[in-house]
Image 1 (cartoon, one colour):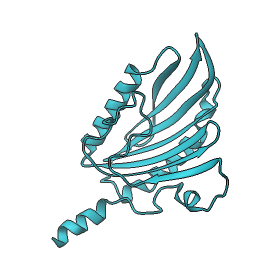
Image 2: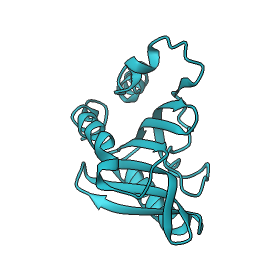
Image 3: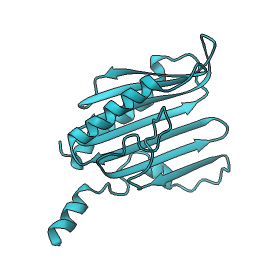
Image 4: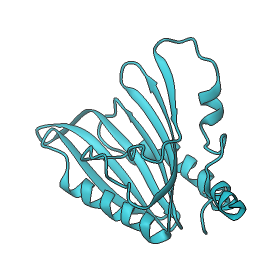
Length: 187
């Protein structure tokens, strides 16, 4: 029994581990902004092109998600998910890649590019289109696997045409989390 408790404590994502937790804990009286926090293992993957509840769920052990929302059209999310094995985390990444290719519409398109962070990482772009031209609105995310962990940073808002600079904060946050995630993951 004692060894089971130690194992459970070893894989739990502790409070204040995520980068945005201090900001989320601050009292904010602005009715147009809010933070939500979840420690639910079953929380949806915050980058989810098909909006399927099962995406990235298989093999999960722990998850922690923070989302900041500001009216009218801005949000950012941070999510760290621990899987039972690096293979399970790898499957979640492959499933996300497949969803990026399969989902979207003529009016909202997804794309992904491999970037060099962790064991594998994707730069995911969601973008509103009017005909063939990018319109206002979209999502920019960096999704990274390190060992059995998935790290997700995403920003949604009134983006125009996709640009490399759209990912500046997500890349910075990803690098910071990669420096500490091995204290929880099986690196």
